[in-house]
Length: 250
Image 1 (spheres, rainbow, N blue to C red):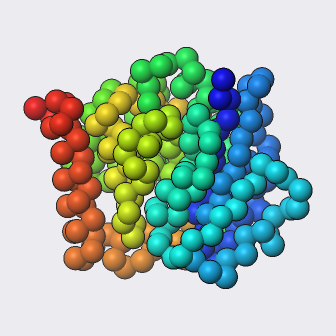
Image 2 (cartoon, rainbow, N blue to C red):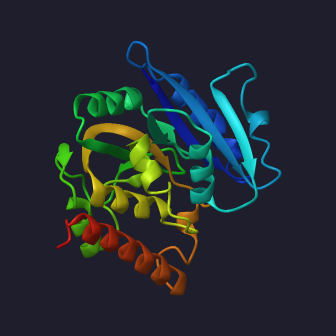
């Protein structure tokens, strides 16, 4: 039986300095008996040199390199190199909270109809202080299929944080990985998953999300302009097509 969780991490040259903290948070994860993790790091472009920031000798770390395509393309390529039953996202500048992976495993092993999990996020600010996710969390437990779309359609952003996703491998493969967008590809994946399967929200903090000036969410095109409009339009069309195809949107 496959008892492997694949943690996938895209990294570019500007973000590689944060990898040691991400690794430390992954190394401290305590998994259920028989379970293990692999860390599939995808260098997004040349000159990243992720190995120089990580210890030698940990066979669980698997580093690949591809031409620059953005974080969502890199995540998908990391997924292509992975072998785990479950696929867990971890961005290079973020950190997993203690117990996060074990909680994901427990939910997915105990609830066969649930295809994916998300969890509570704490923002780590540049001054070292922390803050809660802005819009407030849903009630813990089952996220019924289709429920994430309604919130996104009203607010143009998800209620749960897609950076915390842990997904059953066949479901992620069915969607082709993350949407190949310069930003918001993880939101596109979340709404695709929501159209196909129930999810689950874990109220325990699962991710320490680092806020800093170099992340793509600080780019002026991230929340306004023609690129933003195109991204939102495609994400909506993708989600609505899946909802119609599966009958949830009729």
